[in-house]
Length: 138
Length: 138
DNA sequence: TAATAGTTTGCAACTTTGTTGCAAATATTT
DNA sequence: AAATATTTGCAACAAAGTTGCAAACTATTA
Image (cartoon, rainbow over the protein chains, first blue to last red):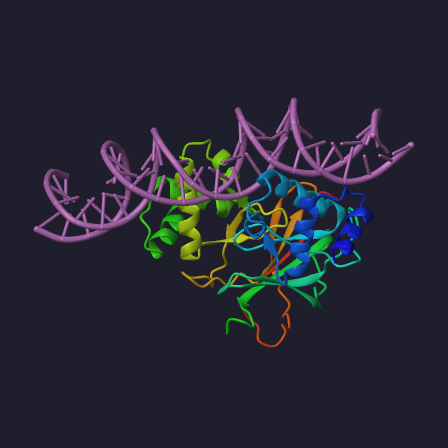
């Protein structure tokens, strides 16, 4: 497992450091999306805030994780699917945020429907974020 | 016009004050969504930052404006449609953010398609945010 | 329309979130 | 194992958002 993580980092031309390994592991273990604060607490504040910010930023740039827009405008991150590469994200699945427990899920198998835009508009990315009650909270 | 604005405030049990009137006017004049900073600059910094925060919060609570989730997690606000009331937003239209000029539009006549969620999930709200190039920038 | 009651505003102080430069520490290359 | 390149943590800062409270304003009532 640790080797798999290192593999992913190397494949993306990133040095294999303790913080990056640990943070990427967290994402692989977690079934839900993570906020900066989640990562701070799940690593027992062993890494500097700045390191976490920079790691997340790097991972997004490399196409390892993606951000999820939320209605309350907090920043969430989740693992990308394999098709994502540097500069080209391809996470066209629906996200779900539970109003009760706050957990955010990537609904990987539910894909974003095509939206027909008015004349003159062209789309690069479409985010669908549903919120309500998740299967664990009802 | 000023009277209409005052009417809206009264209907929502809000005192008619200069800042609220001015800010609500801004939303009615604007074709696009506004960020906190837009409001500060369009009012020539005549109102305290805190007042603007509180006004926006109040308007959202009353169902006068709604927030728009964005991929870069900045906070945007736009007028609600008439059906919105306190505690119950109903803005199921698509939002579009232009990557070039940054303008955010409510595409009022394009409604959000129904998303079929996995068993056990129930939805209260679905946000669709498309981004790309708008009709003014192509 | 003046006095009173209720609400809103602006200020100050603070917290939280995110950013930048740089030296020390760690990883990679040879 | 030494040299080079990259990453980290610290400090200092900047931006965004919050809270308590007295003063200003709005609405109410007589």
